[in-house]
Amino acid sequence: AVDLSTTIAGVKLPNLLLNASGVNCRFENELQQLVESKSGSLITKSATLNSREGNPEPRYAPLAGSIGSINSMGLPNQGYEYYLNYAKNFDYNNTAGKPLFISLAGLSLAENKTMCEAFRDANLPCVLEVNFSCPNVPGKPQVGYDMEAMEQALQVLDPIIGRPFGIKLPPYFDIAHFDQAAAIFNKFDNVVFVTCINSVGNGLAIDLDSETALIKPKDGFGGLGGLLVLPTALANVNAFYRRLKPGKQVIGCGGVTSGKEVFLHILAGASAVEIGTQLMEEGTGVFERVQKELVELMTAKGYKSVEEFRGKVKTL
Ligand SMILES: O=C1NC(=O)NC(C(=O)O)N1
Image 1 (cartoon, protein in one colour):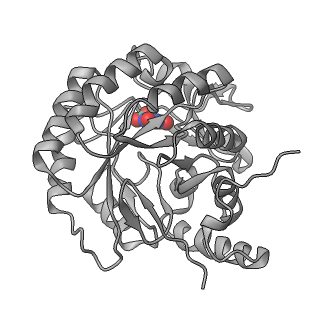
Image 2 (cartoon, helix red, strand yellow):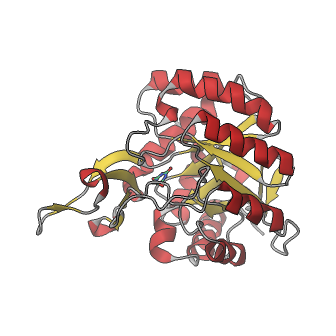
């Protein structure tokens, strides 16, 4: 049988698929749907210190021709204590053996410090993913695009978290930025994974008939996801796979609609793969379908485990 299991930050995932933070994971009932789904794990909606309503609606839209999505949610979430409580009550010995990831997106370093201290003090088996890449909070530039700020934040947060954790990154488009960002992450032993990518920030989707932007916030500017971001996602996965020190891993996110794109993310170097837009459009049944397709593809290619081809993308 084909083995799709993987280990991230020292925790075992029965299979390498999980949701992208933000999709189907703001409320407990949504998180429970993920627990009951065929995903290998689940991650919560990025939390801020205080609960947030987020941006005005419409703030999410699928793009014509199923090529992707645009969103400017604005970090709507229940506030970090809600997710801390969820993590305290989570059944870490659940029958599916699923670990829990927690996403934190403080609006300031002080907010991230407070939230990380709270999770440290709770000393729970969940894994933290610090989101440095939300593109949709008006007036809040993405920390991931400010290398100095990102390093300074890690100098504060790494010792507080005090155990393996990860970072949700924006897409980079310049080789120098891959070099600079990877060099920063290689300085912090607790940074054991990066998740590439968050949405491609500040796209503009316009409806031809109405001549109107699809979403309301920010004059229609929002993060792009789905199949159209796949090559950018694969490049970011592979760039960090090539640059991070041994022992550090990459979680792939972006453009996964089927087993094919999961296979490509693994080939690029991904140790786990997140599904966002397709989960939003299809529902949690996506995990069973995509897993079946991946197994079929691996079997056709003669692979029994993902280790056999992870990161083995060939070049000409
Ligand atoms: O990090 C984020 N990425 C997104 O694409 N959207 C959400 C949001 O707007 O809340 N946050």
